[in-house]
Image (cartoon, rainbow, N blue to C red):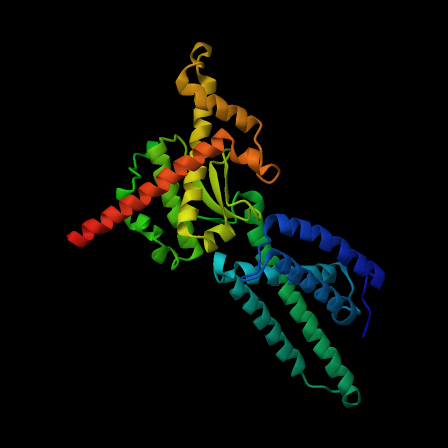
Length: 354
């Protein structure tokens, strides 16, 4: 077999190792999540094993005579892509499986075409068959690499250019639109916040429900801005966060899919209150200097100072926990969640009487 390699074995392995480290840093910060039923440490170890196995197979077997820049990419993108399929299929839909199956099907069709071609040189039959089998394996590798590049690329682009890897299909609303976003006017959706209903919802349906909740909260809090709800990988100890630059509430994917609806609803209401706090700070900053001493602005002044010197819980949890903006948001979320369930039970009791 003709050797068309552009890299020696040492150069090939060096490139694989170098780009593995770069890719892992990118993947871990953007897309990594634990495998179902596995711990963080075991999931990360599984991914490393998949990468190592792929590099060894590609370097010494599949790409022995084709060590090029493309095969380096293929050796890396396949394990990352397969890991993404394993961890995100139930979240973003079955389209990833369709892409994977399509790639395998195309490679299989090509393999049938190659393997069924008539062999004219009978003396070298075994060598020709071996060469053809190798060609089929390389074709499968390339097909999988392209498919996995598409999978990782689509999800990764959403994470890079937006706050969320998955966004709600329910539109975010603002008060100026004249839509009365209240619990009573959205009772059919609010009823999905019962545990028995919530556990049956898909990830997209859960996200859509939370977007409705965010619309209700924006109405009750009198926000002049919308609240966009999305999903992100926020890390091991962060359940949700709020970005006031884009008015986005990001819910951690594992939190949304695995924790109780009560806790998820609490997180959503908590982050919605942070948006309200930012609007209070804006009102305080715009107030006349002689008016800033008014009692009504006391909390807003504290929020402003804390936002300017915000303490992240990953570095100092105790100081983070006792910031006024966090304590008030927790108090509000607790009251809001209680109100949702009180209204749910009142509605169900009324329906049972009727």
